[in-house]
Amino acid sequence: MEYLLDAAQMKAADTYTITQLGISSLELMERAAGACVEAMVQAGWNLGRVLVVCGSGNNGGDGFAIGRILLEKGTEVKLVFAGRMKSRTEETVYQMERFLKAGGRACGDFEAADYDAVVDALFGVGLSREITGNYAELLNRMNEESGKKLAVDIPSGICASTGQVMGTAFRADMTVTFQEKKLGLLLFPGCGYAGRVAAADIGIDSSLVLKERGVCYTMDGKDAKKLLPARPADSHKGTFGKLLLIAGSGGMAGAAFLSALAAYRVGVGLVQIYTAKENRSVLQQLIPEAIISAYEGFDEKELLKKLAWADTVCIGPGIGISEISGHILNIVLKEGKVPCMIDADGLNLLAGNPELLNRLSGGRFVLTPHMKELSRLTDCPIGIIKKNRREQLEAFTKRYGVTLVQKDARTLVGSPGYHTYVNGTGNAAMAKAGSGDVLSGMIAGFMAQGKKPYDAAVLGVYVHGLAGDLAREEFGDYSVLARDLAGYIGSAIQNIMCVSD
Image (cartoon, rainbow, N blue to C red; front, side, top):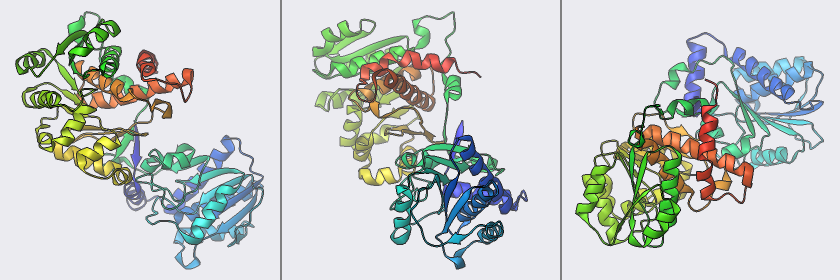
């Protein structure tokens, strides 16, 4: 598990280390600078001629220290001090003096040249305003340089808490961030500016901060392996759960098929598809492993029987927003007792009948909206949601007591009482119709096997993205289909199971 701190959380950890543990900020700065130089050396960068651009704050102090270390290694260092002399921190004043005593020279003017590397130490994680004017022009000129580019802690212009570009930003080939990765380095668009991200342990004690629920995290295969449902040898299909999949209006059999297939691929024991009668024949051919139950109109008595049979319910993929679909969702919310996954048209029905949101109680519901669906659910513009993704997610989950899978290029999962999960798997090749149907089947399948809604959502999102990564290796960025995602679920799970403990 890897924690992701925002600007305030990182500052709190830094302050605690300095004031309570007695490690000076100058010592931390020396370690940070050394880690940056070591990262460039380990990456095999040519360091014959390096441009270092420093600001007035402690990020600039890191830059001066980097410049001094490079000088001592025989590098030709061009250092531009772009800050204000009177605004320098004590640490930056000290590091500037050491750099000058080492034979360095700091100038205020940027000169384009054929640099082997460019080091961005202009602004750190504390940046809270848009970059404009001379600073924006400077960053743009730095980006135009042909050499390798290193960002110190975070690319200047990227918000450490949201990943948003604050006017303009430095485009790095590598970012050396200190102690813990910053949330903005994983969220888009920030991750597109960070390049390869390396977290350097410089001795900051973040243990107290990491206990706070407001801290986000991401995970790897080792963490995912711990979440996989057990597969005892003395088991049968009933051991692994019964999933009622309410999916597919007339002519929308594909959504039901993809969700059911994905549920089976993650290990569920039995799937019953409750669908419009027009879909019966095609689904029986597409997925003979499933039970196909069809309806012509709303039949409450029959639906209640289905709900009593199920260990988990998934409703939404392709069901449409008809009156019949609305009645079905209403009964599922009113009479259902088991964990429930709501996706696609189920979410659209909720958005059209917001009074139903108040029935999402008991912690048994998982909702999986993409940005447009979440905008409808919250009556909040997509632009505002994207700028404040974590806050929007946490506000929604707190209000309704649900697990929310906030789907996007970087998917977030949140639930009351849990840390917010930031998914690191997946790619743009997955941006195809049906991809969400596969995800809903996976999450519901994990819930049917006994995983708690939040754990099922996190695991489902991770495996879904990993399946997409494997599919891209075979089909490339353009040609991955939703059925390919389902086809690679088994390989993704095998990869996870083979990870060393």
